[in-house]
Length: 152
Image 1: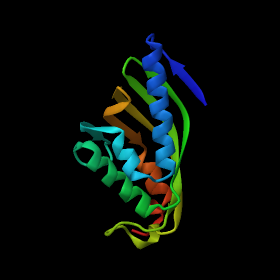
Image 2: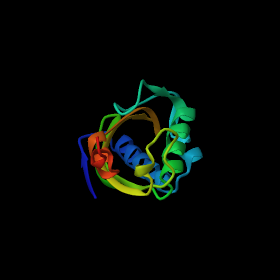
Image 3: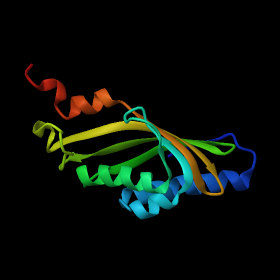
Image 4: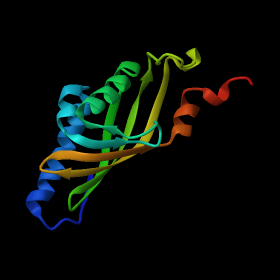
């Protein structure tokens, strides 16, 4: 793993690095309670792949509970991250098998494996997340689960 740092406050830098690493460990354990504890009550959690901004620990728990329910073998591989001031940008892969698609998801997607390259921009203070914006290629996901292979 490569870590890029541009932060001059070493204590803050190490705290952010530690938070990022503990966060990804909690993701890989599918521990939604621990994941939620990283977020402050007013934290803005967003992704262009869903509608609106979600807020706070309950939203974080809900978001990841959905991911873990639909993809029980979901794993995250932290590739590298950059730390600067009170922010971190993490690049990672997210992969698994869509074993339990949510209601309304076409059945042909069930059992399909996917691997996505993702990035999250975190805003942090005191070991807590005040904001997080996650990006991944939705078209790549749809290709991998067979969406474009269906007859029209």
